[in-house]
Image (cartoon, rainbow, N blue to C red; front, top):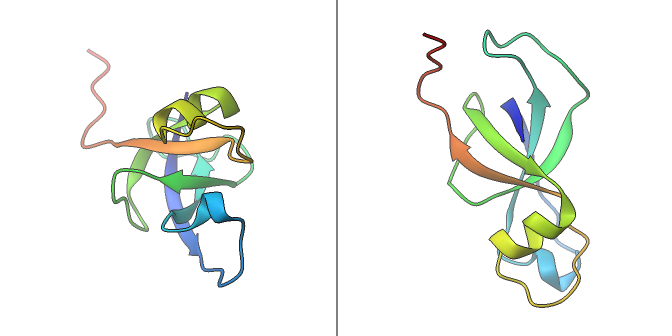
Length: 90
């Protein structure tokens, strides 16, 4: 699981069928204080996130397929599964 910030989106008119009707976003991994901790990744959005949102990303292909309810192998590794409203470490 990755915490990250949505920094952009990807628009593609020609793509694999498994990406049809999928919103694809760019997410930069961060810590709880929004400091960058890794390279930007591509993730399928399942929660209607937008640029600037802090999100939870599952970054494992099998989990992505299960979350998206595909019963066949798909080339998707990362899926946004939640929008973070607040991080409380107490």
